[in-house]
Length: 278
Image (cartoon, rainbow, N blue to C red):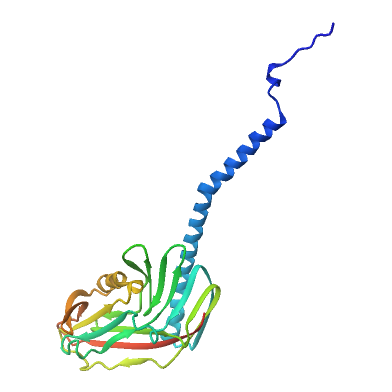
């Protein structure tokens, strides 16, 4: 008589059961990747887009420096604009843009050398990171829309020479003939609009101990980079915060006291750059 042996561990073997186990593992794996991995990939992509645009804005700042300081007539730069949109905001069409006012202690704010100077800007607005990066008045500044404050990524070209007691302030306006915006791949074309203008500061030289005042007035809440400019005035230019009386109201400004032992010189240069296309 033939004897048959049965293995008890073979009773539960089934193709359907194996398929269900493998299918369950695949679904769980896809779910974990979707739940944890995909948001991380999006965050890394957003961070990469922001870092790329920070570098792009510094490249555009160098283009503006070449046009203004080196008198290069035309500059063109191709760049990738990811995760947001690049805008050209002309001071001619934006009455709420930030302003700069410059005067000295002897003349007072009623007769300033520069009054309500609007520079306009090239601004990148990120839709995913809720971040704005602006090239304005020769500086690159950044702010988070969901958080107060701002930071300066690249400084403008202001300086003070202690030996000659000379302070040089440059004001750069970015104009355009029409509303410009770009997303994706774009080419920023800029050219010098007019010859540089040097503001005549009288008397020249200024009497020893003269205070030079600078006031930055932010525009709307989306144009407020006052923290970045505040840090630049105080930490880099060694200016002191002051309360200035303008039009019967007290406004925050910054004072720069020249060497009290000798006369002071102040040079204010104005440049106008036209953004032709993005």
